[in-house]
Length: 329
Image (cartoon, rainbow, N blue to C red; front, side, top):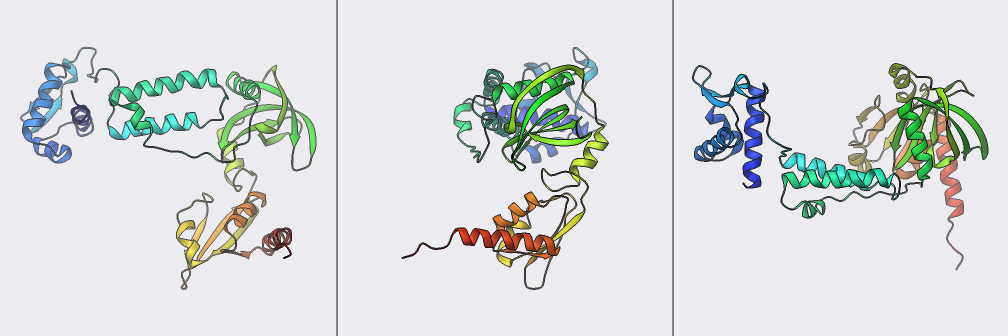
């Protein structure tokens, strides 16, 4: 049976599931095929797949009589996918393959094979489908595979971790006891949100900065979802904490058409000015990551507020200009 027929049969079942009863006219409109083709698909469902599909005179549409199905509810056999689901699986496959090469390869390898097998259920040529999607990964920092496995194990088993951590910002090595809460893959890099027993507060640790780690035989402290959300959602980017500032940023008319489509913060506000420029207001607690994004958009952005952030951007741009003076001829 062709892929098109598989998609039609799947869609017929799902339409009836969603609407309880579907008329022939509606099926023809949704499937964009002839009545004869639909009747052949319904016959295939009934005769070959044992689907208790029948025409209901009072509802004037096709229904599925689950009370007549073996097991109490009819389901399509095996794993059947339409084109959108095949593409979703394809994207999953590429995302899995984009994980740092070698990181959990013994676990990811079988998963990739399973995804390819699922793709084969919905298409005759899964390899050719894989070439139709390209995801580019950039600037990922390397994580030690054994560190990742220890962290993931402690997280799943709800155990505390003892780690030796290199803080790049302060150029400092520290030893911490933490209760891991969640792994985060952010801007191509792995982070661990955890309760730090030394600081008695939630903290985020970059996995590539872990120099040593082992699991402790002690249950981790569990932080409530509400507390996690309150702590990590209000800040900007990976930097958590209560937002204490609001950046008011003005983008040029040329850059506005890109920034207008971006979401910088879940509580951002925006508006267009008469000249076509775009004003974006973003809450933040720590300006480090926000400053990096502003440098990425310079010189097409101006910081209107607060003055301290405007000065920080000015100093960063001046320092960059000083380091990149044209070579003397």
